[in-house]
Length: 337
Ligand code: NAD
Ligand code: UFG
Image (cartoon, rainbow, N blue to C red):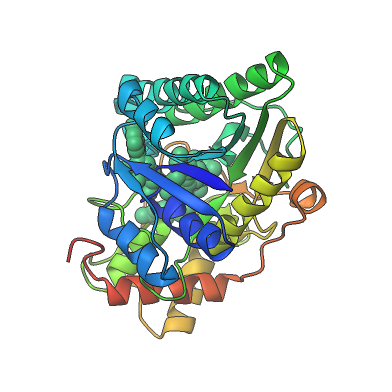
């Protein structure tokens, strides 16, 4: 089976490329490298000893996208491509709606033209908005608190509408919790440009002494140690979840939203402490003001993923943090060495 991955060179995309190739799928990658590097795809080839076609193109370039569908026997799509920085989305909402929403519309139109009716979409736990009842379940009410979240919400709705209109269409909306870690080889990993927004890349850049101290955004949350609780999931477990979702979509029509999380919650201070313990590297930090929009807690119900996809996360926090550190240590400047 031949699968097109949009945003293939990104953090989650590159790990999913490895998983699919190892499982015998043929893949085609597209990326405009706005937040990634073609080196990531070369590393995927190195890890798997397999080659595959990859195209540098912007999803919104309908003509170029159509040419890929003409050249390649694509049967299903995994759609990672998008902008993902929450704070930036508040400052540049139009760019986010244009890239994420319009890019998805172009993709779905070209898929329709080529009769490709199976898609796995990278959604996010952000669609649960300010929900306070834990664990978060797929049937809970949705609502968002920033433009990035609304783009995910809108694309989910578009896919639900498409499945309602075309009974032959399959869509799985994967709501990721907090992906961290890296492939065990240390050859691919998270490589955000500039100052990282997310906790783990900030921690590893403090560990390589590129950044001095980690700001912990608030210690007065309503949690056991005062710092927010999140459901951190190893990116390789997440990648396996995509293969399970592809297999599910191949056998079922219609639209399903599925959480990909571990069902376990860790606080920011626990992440720091565990990182120091498993890697033997100190992480100097200071308590900074709260970051706007951060919730006390966010963690996943895993029941639907287990029932529908037969998938369960396997790796624990220690392994996530060991792998994240191996990647950063081996690649102190990321892909731009
Ligand atoms: P990433 O930025 O590493 O990967 C996204 C990739 O898409 C990048 O390689 C980027 O260059 C590419 N891209 C962006 N716009 C494009 C366009 N118009 N045309 C072609 N390529 C384009 O992000 P990631 O962490 O791998 O996330 C993948 C997906 O999962 C995103 O849609 C993101 O919103 C979603 N998601 C990520 C997280 C997370 O914490 N990493 C959590 C929830 C959801
Ligand atoms: N944090 C810090 N210091 C930092 C960075 C983060 O203390 O320098 C804290 C945050 O306050 C939060 C926790 O670490 O308590 C995790 O923050 P991240 O930014 O890593 O992750 P979020 O849970 O805020 O966001 C993630 C994804 C978003 C998604 C959101 C909701 O990155 O894309 O989950 O599902 F929208």
